[in-house]
Image (cartoon, rainbow, N blue to C red; front, top):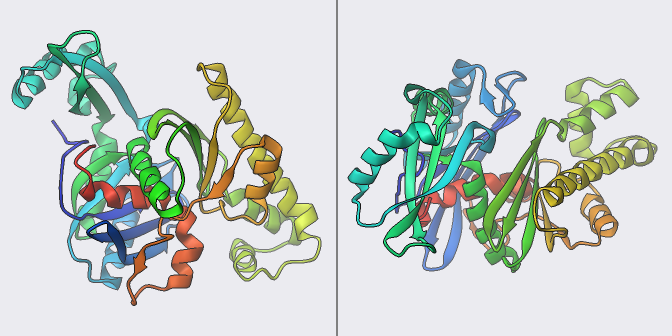
Length: 356
């Protein structure tokens, strides 16, 4: 079996590969205090990663290698994630007396009952969860399967960059850990129904957690790049000029009314639509907290607009709010990028948790 859940108790580098950039993050822990030891990111050319799938392995591997040359990380062991849409998960029940090797053999024999792909095309892994509520002799087991090509492309990209992919994680579970960290850092409550809206450059993923555990995920092809495209179209700028104007804030007076407000409204509609889809397919009809993450999360006025429209507490993620930051890190850049690093933080936390 290829490991999706391999346990590791030591710190891991996170290498977060998205459609627009690659981010490398390393955290350490002393007692209950966390520290950001390394953070660096590089943009990816358009088309290198498409809808969370690596389309050009050579380019992604080269960019990871460039990242590694910028820092001297404390380890070459790394965690990387595959998206929820690429993974099938199912909770099954097996005899609690089985050893891990016996459980693996039984799952392999019976896998065709759970997985709608030829077994030679998928990576399978499992993890014991909790005793069965129905039968004390049984245990709930979380089974995960992913197309091998999705796992292997990430493993190969990291290897090209000089890293060993010790863990290939699943985004939904990385986000669970990220939210636990966020609760510590921002003094939030994990209880109730929480919606995390992770706004990437070209794709937005909404994660729903109940009491800190993932229960629903929805991906939409919509992202922060829409804002840059709208600026380009409205003011006749090149992509580079539009991005530079966004960073500097040097935009015409009409920008907020003509470009920013429509973008915020569209983002709000996307979130509202995702929530309605969740409500219609579940027993729930409300959420207790909305967390904005991803590169566009800090869009001026977005959190306030969503909070007012949905009458739900809305916060912008900062997983490093109370962490110590190493002196070599550009603190202003980390602060500006913090919301976009929530998934990265969840991956980096993998080494501190025995679960997943």
